[in-house]
Image 1 (cartoon, rainbow, N blue to C red):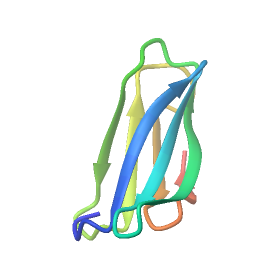
Image 2: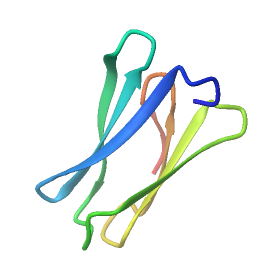
Image 3: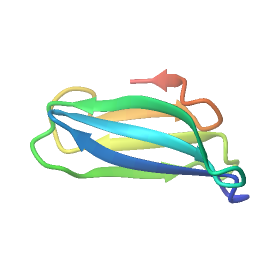
Length: 79
């Protein structure tokens, strides 16, 4: 998040790309979501909206190549 309170990491778990939202002040996981499935490579690109409310991700092909999440709780806004 722009204020540094939330950090989002991404990792690969088999054919899924998983996002994890972290509370940087307390050092605890806030949420975990599968962002993309069946991508050809490992990469997930992420961007946070200027107002700090939305996380947009993209992945290299497969289904659901562009998705948006609410940053504070990881809820899917659109896929």
